[in-house]
Length: 328
Image (tube, rainbow, N blue to C red; front, top):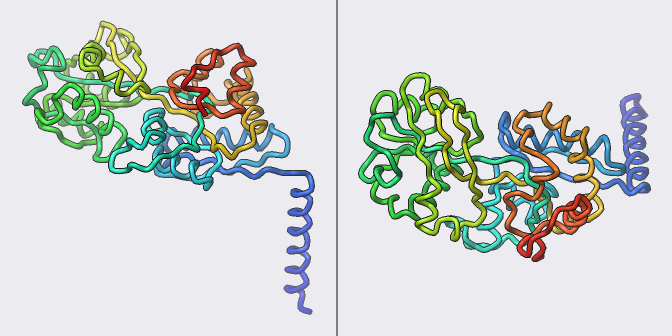
């Protein structure tokens, strides 16, 4: 036998013994479906996977790149992935067979916790004569890239108000939209992302802008009843240059989810590690967006069933589980 074959045989033997040993101690290998390279989803999924593999006994979590929320929903539901990050809206609509162009139901995706919010910004130029949402009728508005979460949220919101078909909608990314506003190519643009957002900062640096409050019009149209996963919030005065007033808005929530097939104890122990004082500090180092994470807000934005292991953990923290969250 050649040296190469002997070496290969030894290597394979070691690998086999390692696999047997792992199986013997009951090692659970899990996959975490995140997002595109460089995106916030991917930072979170990779950071959590690394920490859980290190800190939770007999658990090894690998990170998977993904197109984002909808792919994660489908992977976790099918069991291709065990953990994922999915917007609360996609979780709710998917569970109820109401996703755009997809009437299938995804009942096996159970929420674990709230990670961070993506608030709506509706930006116009100061002095444009656009003072409220209804003034956008007949106007040119950029709503994010085609097929993006921002565009989907915009279509839901403006359709509820009866405005979607009465505006000239353009599908532009945030940075291009900020430039287009400055060049008077559009009258408004829509951003669905955490604040402060770089493209809104860009627009405010070049123009005097105004950010319209959007919650009152949504209330009047029944928007929040139709889409209960959106939660109201305030974009504080001073967040952007020239915007010296609170903006009443709403947000979707990025949720950490698990498949119904994942062992309750693993979900419980994963949450216990990440939502410890040390775990939360670690997550902020991974991505500053994680400042939104807290034990007190662990169930924010969740309007679908939580995983059995998550329910146990959050009850131990003194949080109340709603009827919708317990309806597995």
